[in-house]
Length: 605
Image 1 (cartoon, rainbow, N blue to C red):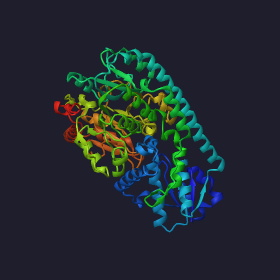
Image 2: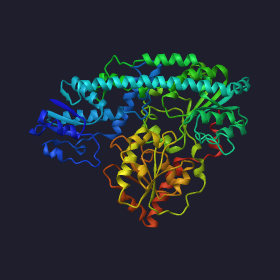
Image 3: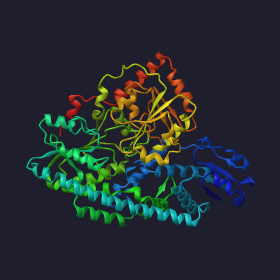
Image 4: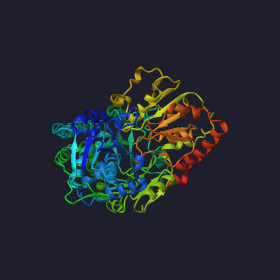
């Protein structure tokens, strides 16, 4: 038996003479993009193509297997820094995509009488996964990657990690110095003789009103509610965006007690964690299986190769910073975002070690998508992972989703209210229907969101009457995505980049919203706008509206977009309003109103 890994269709053609693909002896599976690609080459080379329609992978089982698999890894990696990895967090990393493809290959070899299988996929990591898989199963493996290419990729990964961590060191050192310069006196003036309540949150450049007062985009009016009820509270912030500008604005806000997290990081802590991460290695010594596939060697390689994105100095320093905060203040309670992303367990580890009497409330502040596995915990994780004392959700729907997809019982999760989305309580649902040919493309703050932009531009950049407004996420402006976008949108007369600000200003201009994973989709429906979800993967979906079928359409890169847009805009008003009302009822249940009873949950400590 033989597996041959090919990068792309061009490599398939170029290697035909070497491997004699046209002999008729080869089966083939293609994992690449299907957009604007001719597959005539498969027929010309007489390849027996295996389609995804012939392969059944149970979507729900794969998700639960992945949750259980990651939960069990904590037994193999006892180092506390394991909790600071993207893999342990199960947060938007590449591993489930690789495991999904490995499971497909395993199923093909188990269910088809195949002697020679061509696997077409551009991922170097998947090439290595196939290499280790083949060795473990005594299969001959051939890759079109040369040994020089393998050395290059591995050296590049080391170099990128080394450059990234040095850059991160210098950036954090600068933040520490600036924070201490601007807030040293303010810190001295704070009374430390009384217990305080801490809100751990984030600040953007636009997190300030016209008077320069901080507006918490994550917890909304909660700091004000605390003050009205006599609570002594401090907002502890991480700045997302231009650090200088945000810190200057925070320093000028004399009405609110806001402190940057870097203020509590000591230089010696920074140096110690920096050196520790350089020498850090995660290596499993016992065999690790995913659905009967031995992935021990590949996982060790993956964690080493992927180290730059796997673990960050910023996240790890939350342990040291939290310890220093506890050394200065007596903290009665901490309210923090709850997403189970890597900084959270480091923050909680320090807190549980130094101040176990402090009550910690984790607030699930946004949406929970279909494959939001960072929220879905196994029994092993619930027993071992550092966790808040209580978890509050934005409403009963996200509570139900988290509980139903977790493999262990959350003993402390309750439905609260949608602090970030209080503005949706204003009755904007009765606005008149818009039928213009203008769409809003809402991007989330993840680098691979460029796939959505490429799809939209490919479908609508020529020969149509649609105008496109692209709204980037605050932490990922178009300048960072530009190099991945295939069409030069700056030269297109029908493409505009949103100026940001209130999302309502963009909603007012359009008749349809297109998204991939953004919470903007839920806001759009509340505003009375139909939505289209772009699905970039058949199995792993981060659609926050995965339960909704009304007032929402789903496309992938094979779907022609313009006819669908025309269909939506040309819907008769009765049908449009009927599905709109059903969708609005779902959103009202999703984002619960912030009543006094719901708000009091945060102060009932």
